[in-house]
Amino acid sequence: MTRALFLDRDGVLDELVYYASANEWEAPRVVEDVRMIDGVSEALQRFVDAGWLLIIVTNQPSAAKGKTSLEALHAVHELIVQSLHVPIAHSYECFHHPADGCVCRKPSPFFLREAEREHAIDLAQSWMVGD
Image 1 (cartoon, one colour):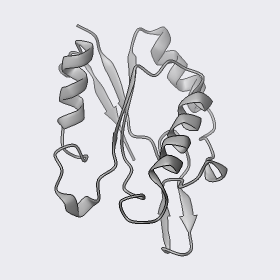
Image 2: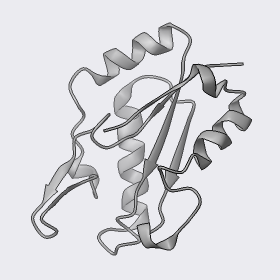
Image 3: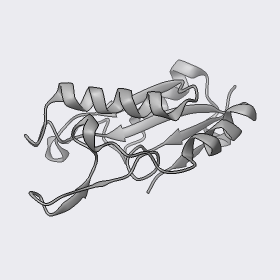
Image 4: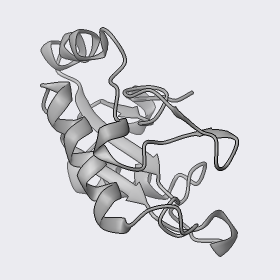
């Protein structure tokens, strides 16, 4: 079995964005707003070199809230993954509105269990990093 480093995305890999319209710090809604956190790629490369799988688990409700499009969110995610320059084994994204009551929205362990099954991960030897 494999150990994995589960990574929240926004505030961990990329910087949160202040949107005055919502008076909130949020995930980037468009690719122009993406800013990577300094040093994150180098830190993640150390985990890859040590044999860890890197898996992103993120809530992305902005489209469900009417703040951007699903296509824009996919483009943002693709840019973030490419900007890391490290192998990401899988990304799990919940696009549901927080009020939907879905099973996949963090802090639910749904996606961690999916990753456990799909990638033969030993959850007892794995870690989750979030902000």
